Length: 500
Image 1 (cartoon, helix red, strand yellow):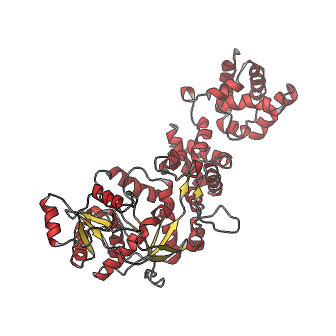
Image 2 (cartoon, rainbow, N blue to C red):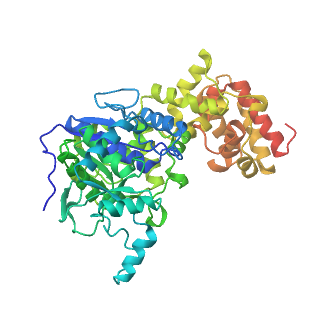
Image 3 (tube, rainbow, N blue to C red):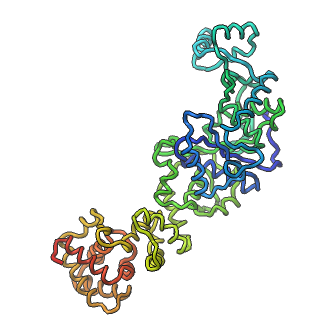
């Protein structure tokens, strides 16, 4: 028998319902992205719900981090915290009365029963019947008499409340994987609440879906095994007048890391905010996360979120696991950096310059940044790269420091004649322009000393910028100015062991 499901003609309502524990991770955000794109593509509603009933694990910091993550990425929600909506509250910790009412109705209707069996008793019954003792609950308490329940209570036992699973197969059509069947008897009656009535996740999650009118549930494939329990509960809730029955489910492929194991929130590369700290832009990171199980087609890897929304169809999501590839993520991000208008690129790099102790607060600084931004935009993978390449233009004195590895390789004793020749030629320039600087350095170092370009310009680059990777050398020196450039070269001579 196939579980009844919401009609596809109903307006789509999806939910993103994380628990506020730890730091948001890329797998979680990929799930949010696919739900958001599905809602936006279908003209539906994206509901953001917080599942915060586990007081021992939930935290205010994690809750605020979730809000921060979605805002930074631009994944706007239609209903939820700080937005409101007709189905609030949107935090489970504030919905206790709703859970108590639903549990009472299920108990009164006989859909849920009290269970007193201890784990050791369940194992003993399996052993006595020749079954695997680890099979789990055996539905033995389904038909306890009042006298048996009274006897258990007299022993001081506290019950749990279990849902009666239907005596039939449960089949549903997964939006990603097609028809899926769970055979009767393979899913035992499961616990919805403790004896004191405090609800557990297997009750609160599907119940909130029913109360909030959710139609489509897109979630990780690791949750597939819980789907028959959710379907059975939603059917029971419908019978007691709550909700419209089972939903449509789509189980998304796992995001894996090294060794094709599931990418855990404990894995460093899963921490969403590490990518923001490095200088990934939201467009780039979301573009890459979209590729973890979906493709826009036409052999395209780079696209905007508007293009994703226009093309996204849940039926085109792959059922195969998707490996997180940092190098590809970086390449996608670099493409989005290159696509930014240069003024926007310059604006976005400023917070990363601030982390390098550079504040752009004068007209002169703003002019230098505007001129330098296009010089590094094509060379940057993340915004922190750009900030490191640009920093030398805005600092002097003790704030300017040579990269020690770069200096060790490029400012040895053999660099002294190179830098002294560069100083002599540049000091004589009347026109401090990119073209004049290029002509002077090539004349003195390549023609005059007979050096190959790498040997000629590497010491100059490191002395001037402090790094082996910088904006184009001649343009950099023009922006740095005559006096500062010559001072940097004299400092390079001193570092290389000359007399300056």
